Length: 95
Image (cartoon, rainbow, N blue to C red; front, side, top):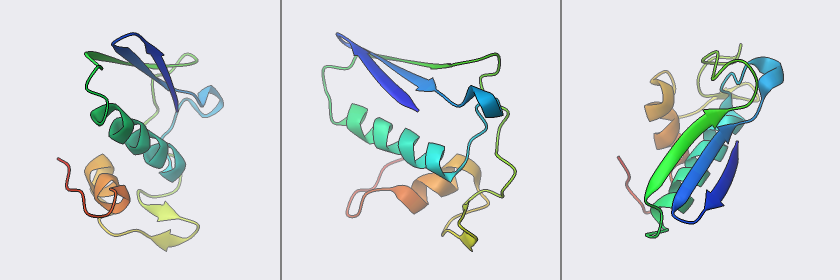
């Protein structure tokens, strides 16, 4: 994942074209860190979400959702919502 800023416009880029931008735990974590950063920046007025390569995303990587180094994360099995719950910063509730 990559974040580029151009004034009030943020561009998030899925940047793993070799795997058709399939999401894995590392991409989930990077995306949520970027979203947290953008939420803290009131000057951001628009967000573009794009991808490198010929695929925006082939959905989930071969490992199951929430499986990181062989262990199951809390909230796994619920897609990005479950991953968000597993990765949210302590003491902060986001929806």
